[in-house]
Amino acid sequence: MIAVRVVVFLLGAAVVIATFGSAIRTVVLPRGVPARLGRVVFRGLRVVFQLRARPSHSYARRDRVMAMYAPVGLLALLATWMALTLAGYAGMYWALGGRSVGDAFQVSGSSLLTLGFLEPFDGPGVALALSEALVGLVLLAMLITYLPSIYGAFSRREAQVTALDIRAGTPPSGVRLVEFFGIMGKIQDLGDFWGIWERWFVDIEESHTSFPAVVFFRSPQPDHSWVVAAGAVLDGASLLASSVDVPREQRAEFAIRAGYLALRRVAEFFGVSYHRDPHFPDQSISVTREEFDEVWERLEAAGVPMKPDREQAWQDFGGWRVNYDVPLVALAGLTMAPVAPWSSDRGIVNVRPPIFRRARQLPPD
Image (cartoon, rainbow, N blue to C red; front, side):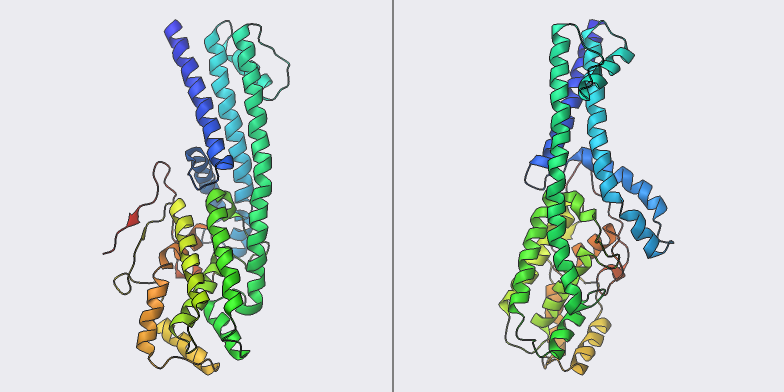
């Protein structure tokens, strides 16, 4: 019997330590380290939400349902932390002897929630009660301090997403972005625009891997999406760099690189496999040549100066797009983004984040 109690005590301590470690990795550690417990909670909750947000339903209904996914997920994560802590300490109280399983859970709940309606009477029990109260307070405090960080990142992200409507339409698209500046006669004055979005992508890479829950926070407007906005800017910069006959704009190329690195790292966190050094046309892209030709003719009709060699422009566009094509389409499916050209209209990609491993980067073919 003593051996059983020792094993139960050690298992209870291991549960508490693992739970607290998961909370530290989720809230405190300033880097994108996957927390398995958090993934289990969010993946399990995702199944429930998908039952109410099936593809057969209208987008408006699915958007209303999924708007609650991330907030409910955070509350469920806190509840999971507290429940596991309660169970772990209950096992340790029982292992000390002198209590039934029911009494051990009552003492654990009283200590965790600092209610004080039951008190342990022996020295080891008092030490456990004090440590459990401290753990409970720290878990709650960590989540409370976590929320302002999430909403700060969300606000910075959405300010730029909303502003993009002015230049790229609703839903935004890369061709509309280039067309707008071409019609305005400002096609050569986009340097500051690309600089702003380069910084936006850098912020996305840091915040959406350190605080992965913010990936699933939906925009205030149902037809907005941070993934769609990212795709529109990247496609606009790729079209400018490959097809528009203007002096080379290095800031647009820097924005593309910042963008595909950000999307890759966020996608990798959620288990999306991609080629680390893709080459077009060895690796295909989801944009077809026919779609590219349609965009070319649309831009020409709008008076945008196009390069003389359309075939080379297609190869150059594919060379840029191949760097972010897979992560963009996968993240659009993962976040159930609204339908937009060249991103979420490519088809739904069912991404299930791995619990026990990171995504695998594929070598070039």
